[in-house]
Image (spheres, rainbow, N blue to C red):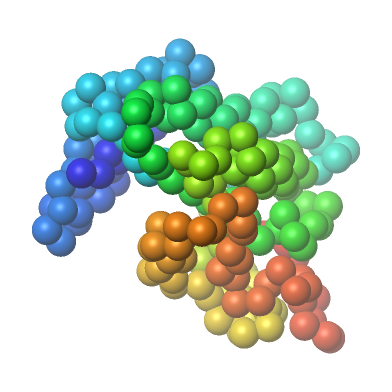
Length: 225
């Protein structure tokens, strides 16, 4: 049984639910504003009450807005930190506190290859994702042996709201494998983690080699993900 969380994208959540059901699975949708700590704290308990114990948490919701060290404000900082860092921490804490007896679980954080390949762009976002990577490793130590905690770091997968199709094409053509990441590759990485019981505290980059360096020699491209 899959619990599909959404903030404001109810229609997309319903589509995801139907896709899971059409593939032979079971799913229900649960709304919660990840900027509201009370709602975040309740979410795991509500899912457990309706569907049973939560044994896998995938933190993939994210705020991705452009700011810089010079332009970042308290508002842009808090927006990124609440959703990208605080919410995964609170959800992970709730999952751990709701496990009983011999139950085991997995937490998978969807991060970003840029935590390895740091750039000065999208400063608040980058800092929040870098902190989430640190949280991943910290939780892996703190919650073992009952809970494994790992991360996936995607590269150019879909055009962002900051990009035109041409911008996105130039972006993925600049990375070593010169191709975009297929969403199913990220799903495959998640399945690999779930099927690897000795794996914890790790980050898998699914990014066509983007973490190796931003652009190929002779190419210039804006850091717009």
